[in-house]
Length: 483
Image (cartoon, rainbow, N blue to C red; front, side):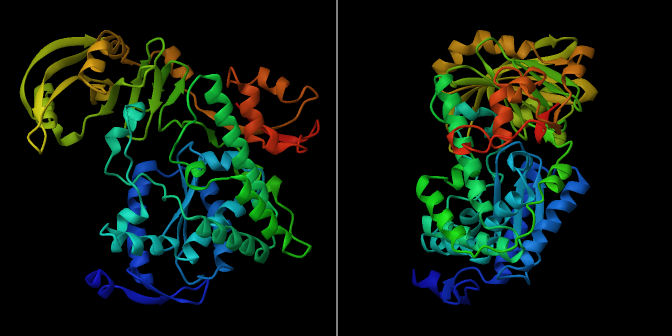
């Protein structure tokens, strides 16, 4: 502890004005944030829309200008992810996903989200956690960005362990409350009504209810994930706190919430998965840029991640993970297996998947600790002369053995895109339309979202569940739709 404290510096917190002992000076914050920023962009990918990026950046820069640290070189990034997520890294790096943009109702709502995240940076919350973690013997970067540690139920994401997961750990209640207060302050200074912070929490509560309702209907527990609902809890206590904060500001002539400008900015935004990520349609997965498709066996589901796609069984204890083979892994199937698996023993079998040459391998390998494990996988020469690794995974040997016949069925679905597949691979996009007299029930009938379309349309328009009471739009009012 003496050595750790000796490495600390004294920094005046720009929000509180108090001196803090810290392992991260402002220069270190910026350096750590820049390093983690590269990992985040690699993990998620940027959303490729220069106009939307400029819109979000302009809004963020206006808020940051009125913050306690306007001198930072602020960076605002739209991530190509359908997750409901927004987060910040030390040094002025703030992120919003396509998913959270799709759920906001106005520019003022988005400003509330971004103002809150700016508040985490200005109050040095990342640096504070880094200092606490460093005193406990954990690295600074680990304190700022968490790596994903997932079970077989999220088997698709196992391939990206070791890369920054792209979300900041849950803050303390005091830090969340401080970020809410700062967000409200920055909204007011930018001439948005601080009451929009309340609207943002109502959106979160609606999403919590939606997730709980649909988990219950499907007979499973509530989902836990790396999204804003995980790191920014929207409980009743926090909602009351934010209402109290917003009420403390005098009634003033705040600017319009700029709902029309916001809806124009997100017009055409991909909804759900994007073309670059591949799209899931029921039991099918289509990746148009890479030219291949997969179909999950009955009772299984598709899990699409940034680096891989998986077909996972209903029990969540076995699955087939499909990912591109790294370019340096080799040119022949044998080289790829030898370089990627480094087997200690095994046998290969020639196969063909819809006209594509494949090699199946069953064998063993040793890990760095000298422990032996079984390996079952197939290397296939996919479309566009790209090789893919199709790996069989199970929670344990018994689960893998039980799933083998269905894993073979899943593997056999790997195929080049047909004309019908290409037609189905079109991503959904957000548009606006006047609400018809039949309301969301009428819109759902023409929506591509299928079963549950009305609930999802209500959700993205902020009128799902008890949290949206009294906010039902009138016929003729513009609402978000999915096409």
